[in-house]
Figure 1 (cartoon, rainbow, N blue to C red):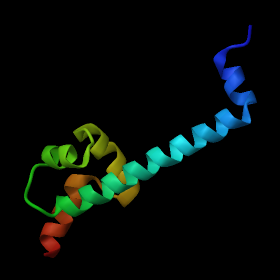
Figure 2 (figure 1 turned 180 degrees about the vertical axis):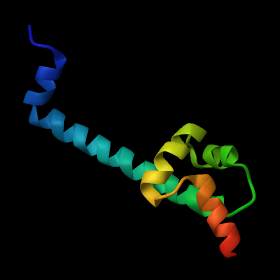
Figure 3 (figure 1 turned 60 degrees about the horizontal axis):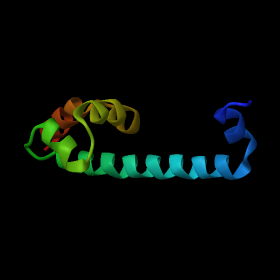
Length: 83
């Protein structure tokens, strides 16, 4: 009997639904990261910012750098000196 993966790859509806779910999840994370970027300029711990935008501190750190090119802490330091 074929595995569930075989059925998922053979079914166009399943793969399209999976792509939509992935796209929706990526969009939600992008919105959360944008909100975090805005909050980082405020004087609150990164742990608090992560909670406010619905991310764990680890996820914030791992997702922020690919999106904005620097780690959250460095982003904050750069904007403190520029202000």
